[in-house]
Length: 417
Image (tube, rainbow, N blue to C red; front, side, top):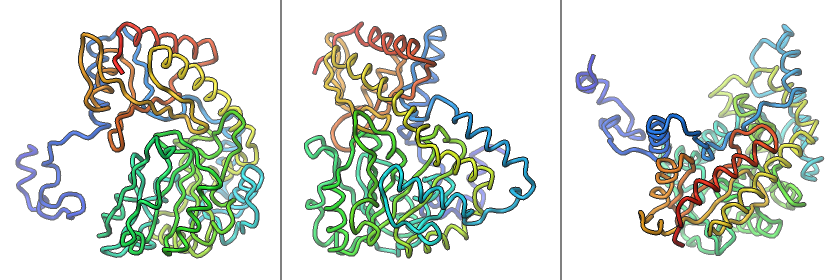
């Protein structure tokens, strides 16, 4: 059956307004990541013999630690682990509470009532609005950033208010810029530090301000912290929950995807305010039946070995150093982040004697098509591209080769800043 004929059936009239209603599937707009995907495919086709350097995905380039994999194999072979996990096993909750204490200095977390596992952070962000948002309610999110909580707020008939992350404010949201009427009407605020895509880190002072502001306006804080343990150059990992009063106003989401190279394993946890954790657990119970128990047990093993993350962070720190040096030698103004594997760099105005770049998307497309270097553009608050140091490379010598190749390709032209 052709797509035209398919669209003429009654099914086309039944789609929910939240995904486009009767116009679902007819939108011809191409979204950012689809454009990147298409440009990569075109570049590979045009230059089949040239290596495409992928610095856009933001997915770890290595497998999980061998100890974690071995633990999974061991637990997967046990018949008692075959059933539904529902809202999680005590062993994982206890491991998560210990992890928060040992790595972040968070005290007083009750694993029974203040922690629940999630099948990664993304589903948790998708479900949390169902705990709070009624039609007309507001969720505050930062831009650029991860949109999931905002998307589901809109699905529920709520509204989204965006706060820009600017270099002038160290890529932290200016809470004082949020209008009084918005703050009083808002139910939730989404924060993410170390930040995707800017790489910025929060401070104790900022989180303290967040707690005071949330209490003033009765707002639920959701701190998404998948990169929290990936910090560099002496910066101690910081948890929102380590700040006095944080547990009174919100929760923090942790994931093993980035800090333990476990993206496909889909395991994380929500911790903090017991009432929010309970509400999330109830919503979650109506959405999924829990992650495979063997994966939870393997994750508990990982959480008990934070040195695994420390080794991963050393690799990313080394790669950041090399990439920042290479870009700055070419005229960019790159600053190494203190956390995450993202490097957020302002774009040039153009190429001397060549194209000009009005948007980050223009520059990103140029890099893919002309230099076979994939990045992610962000035009939400200024014009920046995000480089991810998760590019495929085994060992220091290979990392150095990839960075040298990036520098060589970009050095073939002179950028105008």
